[in-house]
Image 1 (cartoon, rainbow, N blue to C red):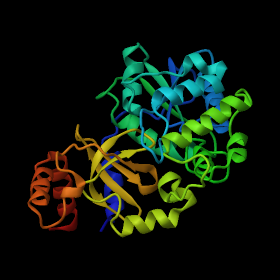
Image 2: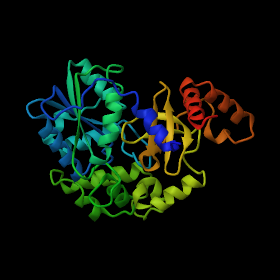
Image 3: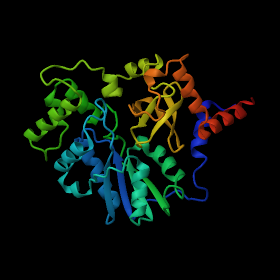
Image 4: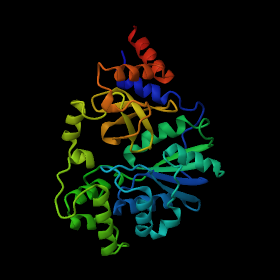
Length: 331
């Protein structure tokens, strides 16, 4: 009997377009990158340079996500993009401020609409497989490319939560700790000290941190991999990422309602019935109500919870998921 994880992996990848060969490296009409950049760092400069390198003589575009919350995505898109253009002047015209580019799928649809028939997507190595599966799964459906090539930006993703390099997580932690020295070391030299300090203060303000006081925020919310135990304890205790909660995948921008929880991952479904799996370190709670029933009013045993479950049960994707699961188990 297949495990639940194996079943989900099969379900997610089974819809990949049949007959489509694995893309090869080479020139493409368009090369894109999609990331949080919150805040932008020296590591992101390497990512942008990699995008330019992969593009060669072709066009390339960088799409900062539109996510915004006080913990993991504190800078609003306009502020974030403004600082990125200061930090990376050689790429400034390629850093796109597109309110409609909320997910990697929006980016791909946009590239397709501009006439691109082939596309490179540059991502961190730890996200390469995820993007290969998702991007190709919806080809010929959401967009129509002859070739989709997902390229690794290297061993470490500067937009991720790693502790081994100057990541956005480390700069958020520095802001929470009121540690400008560490923060400055993660900002490119193209930005002078005063502008770097302005960014530091802007980040603190967006994170709702008092400048002169070391913040006592729970680190598992700001930079999960600096406090993995705290994140997992809160998850296992049912404080975050519960069935029915709305979450956003930090990597792709997809927003959906959680329908299943595992040891370290969740399964969610978007409003457009796209199912996705995410590790808990890669998702953020969204305080947007798709169901119309706030999480605070979904206590088990209440009428609001019953109404909520009834709405979930009529979702065709969820019904199909449940039926397949039962069939696999022989029920």
